[in-house]
Each structure stands twice: as C-alpha cells, then as structure tokens.
Length: 62
Image (cartoon, rainbow, N blue to C red):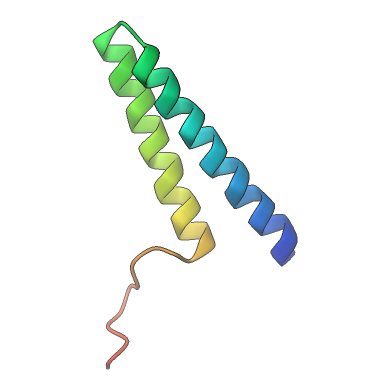
C-alpha cells in the first residue's frame, strides 16, 4: 500500500474510533456503551500499530 493510501486508512480508522466514542457517550444501555468504547479502543490501537506510532517492540538503546 502506498504511503498516501495508508495515511488515509489511518485517518479513517481514527475518525471511526472518534465516532464510536461519541456514540458510546450517547448510549443509554451500559452494555452497548462498553461495547462501543471497546471497539473504539481497538480501532485506536490498530491505527497506532499501522501508523507506527505505537510503543516500540524493542529497546532502541540496544
């Protein structure tokens, strides 16, 4: 995938996560609220992994 395509995908994932967080805030059912929050968290983590902004897997000083 090209860098521009990957960047667009990351932005889309982050926007979807934000939408899910907002939906969770509006949800009246506690189980639905938690499900939406969990899905938003998963998308954020996935976008960080794809974007390379997550924590490094190894110690860079080694």
